[in-house]
Every structure is written in structure tokens, then in C-alpha cells.
Length: 189
Image 1 (cartoon, helix red, strand yellow):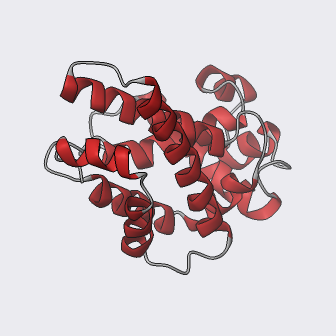
Image 2: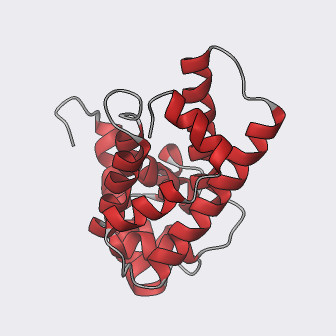
């Protein structure tokens, strides 16, 4: 945490640490807000002042870990470099991600990861081209992001046998050619 973080941020990080402990012992779907607040030593009111539910907490923590790597795309970092950094964060937080990716709840990390990365790529391409994606490229981007999340989850749940760099390379190579051409033209690959 940086020195600029507020008391609320510190509380959110404490809740995230407590959630990680609870996830390790009971799994994401079985974990309760009561367990989290008891582990953290705060009230339910404090929890709900910061998060809507346990999935909101999980997604907030994911954003804190992963968005840093993706914010560098287009500012000297390629998609591959940022994916490698994302996978390194996942390896560093193996228990958290293994448990979080097991959940299929409608607010699950899988869905959040998809929505986050899709929106990020749409915004990035839009900023660099000053125009929205056409319908065909939008379809390819959605398909690529959905597949990337699926393969990331599979990688995590099967023990992360490939290194972060190798996993990143596989995802970059799997990009549909027309989409890869756009990313290459924008100097993002």
C-alpha cells in the first residue's frame, strides 16, 4: 500500500487479507461475510460500508492487483508484457486466484475479468484510433477476451504449469489475425 492510501483503503486491504484466509479454508462460494469480518476483526457494518458482497471484495482486490499491469499497455508495454505481469500477480496470489476462479456465481471473478479486460481493450483501441471498433472487430475482441479468461482460469485451476511468460505468449499467439493486425498497427504487440 502506498502512503497516500486512505483509512478506507487500509480497511479494504485488511478485509481482502481476511477473505484470502477464509477462501483458503472454506473456498469462495462457502465463505461468508460473517467469516470475513470475524477474521478481520471488524463489524459487518464496516464490511458493507466498503463492499456490496464478498464478490465485490474479490473483484476490488483483483482490480488492485491486475489493473496496474494493464495500465502500462500502450505506454511502452505491449499486451504480452502486461499479460506476463498479470500472470505473475496471479502466481504471487495463487491461493486467492485459485479459489476465486472456482466460483461460477453471476458476480464471479471470471465474469469480472472478462468485462474488465474487454472494456480496457475497447477503450485503448478507441483512444488510439479515435473511433469505435467496427462490428466484426468487436466480435473478435469479445471472443478473444472470453477465450483468454477461460484459458487463464484453466491455467490457474490446473496448477499453473506454464510460466507467466509462456502463458502470455500463448494468449498473444492465439489472437485472431485481424485483431492482431489492429493491435500490431497500434504498436501494442
